[in-house]
Amino acid sequence: PKRVKEWRLSYVQLDLGDPTKAVRVRMTDGFLISADPESKSFLLDVPFDKREVGTGGLPMALVSFDNGKTLDKSAKGRHFSITPKGHIACKETPELVLGYRGLPVKAAPPARA
Image (cartoon, rainbow, N blue to C red; front, side, top):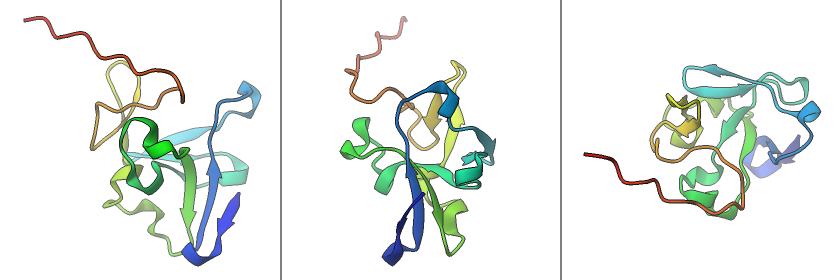
């Protein structure tokens, strides 16, 4: 993990890669928590709560704060749910789901009446 001393934060940026190096997580109370030895107890975080398509150009990360506020219920960029289709979605903005960075976003087809 990398470190930002002035924020008392450790983090690991996420990217697509080799499946043998996949991050293993568990869902606990809406938090996706890392189960990997290198980032144990870090949780998935939308950077700076940029809950928008492309996350403001910033990569998703696993984070851990020294002060224990990692599991802060008011941090909306750290709460996720699994949709009925099996997607990982931001709980507060369920129309945004975890996806592949850089691919074009297609509009959903209109709902049938």
